[in-house]
Image (cartoon, rainbow, N blue to C red; front, top):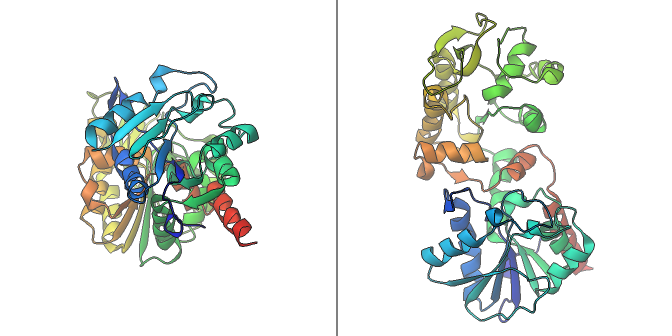
Length: 389
């Protein structure tokens, strides 16, 4: 791929695809992690004398319709308050002539307000591309999306290159997957096995131990013939889970916390996985399971973490997630974490500075872990080959 360091940015119109898709509640930004990481590239282009424009999506608005709930205005206000630069939100960038000033950073309004963005519409992609001299793809969190502001811009911009954040993500994840220090331990949690099926299928062959938690573990327990009561699982994937159990790397709970209702006041009891009653729901790992998993984490030289172990949104059901999170934080192993719920746990337990590398990607993180080529990376590679012809 062409790298940002390969290019002269002076007096060039530089469009950076960043990932400013941050959680916002009541108009306030809950986590600024992605904003902070995006600033590195923005500042680099400014120092090199480029005219900077930033584009991003936010949430899932109805495409083609403006919705103030998904406007990037709160993010622009936050940027102006947080950093010593001038940021300006631009709404009608597809129609109006844009006046650019040196030192000012333009932020396009949510690209998902544009019809054709998610379909990678050719005309929209070309319009985006006409507004820049150089396109920098730096949003790893959207690298798995074939959208107009990702793959489309890579294809049609005069010059398309990979930003430092994107390259760092690729290099760090590649190191962990293909040339890690061993033993390597993975922790995969969350509610649905279907969303992480290809990830589990890929990791189970590469890792020394793969800890399965959350609702995903329920499907594996059913595959082993256990009654899981009222717990959620995916019946159509039981046979597939059974086929994966032939790998000794997979580690699932031997005891669990169960409750009859889900609330912050409900109590749980710890049971062996073969003693769950029909009216009970699995809400967390039990004491024996936690100890087993902590022992595996202690052996690790490399750790890959995605997803919570229990229903950790409730304080009374988060012991497993907390103890495993703290074990990862206190480990001397190189640790990589990614995904929205994982980031929430990291912030909740205040271990941000104790994780070796935190990925900005959710879906892209999982797609990369599954061994698939990300479409935006493929587009950047093709752009490089075109340049060499």
